[in-house]
Length: 215
Image 1 (cartoon, rainbow, N blue to C red):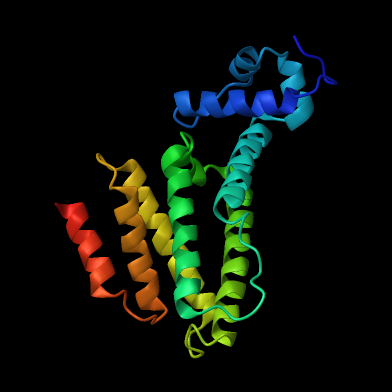
Image 2 (cartoon, rainbow, N blue to C red):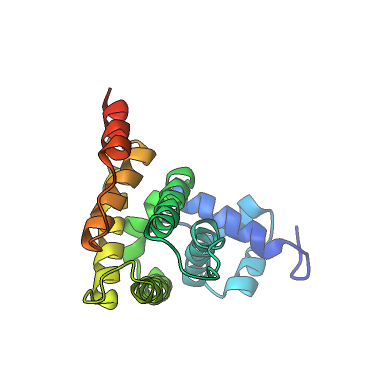
């Protein structure tokens, strides 16, 4: 058994708690987490304070990893982006966002039933606030560069986009059959591009790709 000073104990507890939540469909017991992590239950309470604190920490860890995977590589561009370059970058972000959710075994639980748990609400609220703030800044920069029309309200628009993407992911992850991630990325981006009144994707690229996916 590890003691409170053992390196890696919090990480092992987080991994064990995530596995317990997946197996328990959103429920866990501290004793079970401690057994899986091979630590004393007292150590779990030492690091996270309570079961609610541990669940919140697992969800927060998930969102930190999501931030790193989908947005961590996004650096400010030195100069003015062309519409095509900007659109390509944002579409790639959507693809990375979807890929992370498809590949992470905890994703369906986080965006589904677990998001309504009282102990998770503060984490969800903080993550959504970060998304909204970053998205608004992104749209405002695009407006300054003349990529997105200036009469679009960036705050309202990003809220609609984030809500739409989340609902699409919930449907994709909890349905009987998951849609192809590339097609889902394309469908979500088409929705975003229309909302931002970006130039339509050339038929030679978009329609042919969609026809190949359908065949």
